[in-house]
Each structure stands twice: as C-alpha cells, then as structure tokens.
Image (cartoon, rainbow, N blue to C red):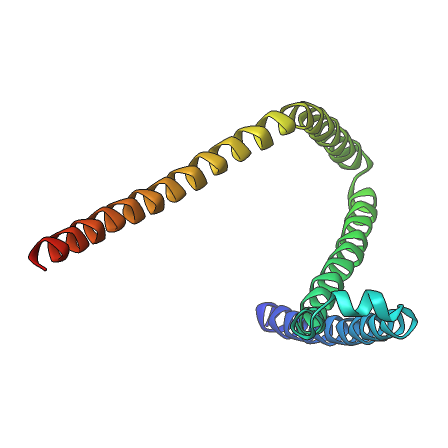
Amino acid sequence: IGFIFLAIIKSFNELFKRYLNKKLNLIIEFELIHLYFEKIKLAPLIELDKVSRQDHMRRISLISSVSAFMSTGIFIVFNESIIFLSAFIIIIWISPMLFSIALLGACLAGISMFIFQYFLKNKYREFIELQLKSFQTQVDYLFSQKELKEAKRAYHQSKIIEKSIREF
C-alpha cells in the first residue's frame, strides 16, 4: 500500500512539475518574443538591413528553444533549493548530530569544488589554446587535401588538353 501511495504522489508531482515548467516556458517565450519585436520596432532601418530575412526567421525559431532552456534551468534551481532546505530541516528534526555531519560533508564538498574550479580555471586557457591549435591543424589538413585534389584535377585536365592539342 505504501508503494502505491508513493507512486501516486510521484505521478502527481511529475504532473505538477510539467505543468509549472510548461507555464514558465510559455511566459518566458512570450516575453522573449515581445522583447525581440520591440527591439526590431526601435532599431534604425540601417541596422535592420544588415540582418537578412532568414536570420530573423532563424532567431525567431530559436526563441522557443531558449525559453525551454531558461524555464527548465529556473525550475531546477527553485526545485532543488526547496528539496535541499526541506532535507536539512528533516535531518535536524531526526538528529542534530546527523545534521552536523551532513553540514560538515556539504562544506567539505563545497570547498573541494571551489579548489577544483580554481585549478581548472588556471588550466582552461591552455586547454582552449590546445583545442584551437588542434582545430586549426584539422582545417589546414582538410584544405590541403582539397587543394591537392584540385591540383591533381588541374594536372589531369592539362594533360588531356595537351593530348588533344597533339592529336589535333
């Protein structure tokens, strides 16, 4: 009976989460579309001519994806904050000693996360430069292969032209 009750509560919780997420998504999408068209109305004609019709259509089509991303992120932050606070309250209610152990563990995890971020941030620039060099090497290779094929094609075409000239 307990598992059935938990399954029913979980189903209602999921339904409620989807409803709130969809409502938040629609509100954000409406606001983003409204802001986009307000910017277009207020933009000088010279600036509007710089952007093609396809770019405007692509930007408008991306609004729904952006609003879905934003609504999901906002909902997750809100939901996880409530869960985190309620779990801490329940742990305090069960055992203050257990709460102090959990709080110590959370503090240690937070400190280790900040230390890791500090070292990662220092290595991030090197990583990006390495990725850019790798990307540039791959692009150079692709273009060199393309140029090699074009050179071979031009060489074969010149041989065909030279042969046809000799035969003429």
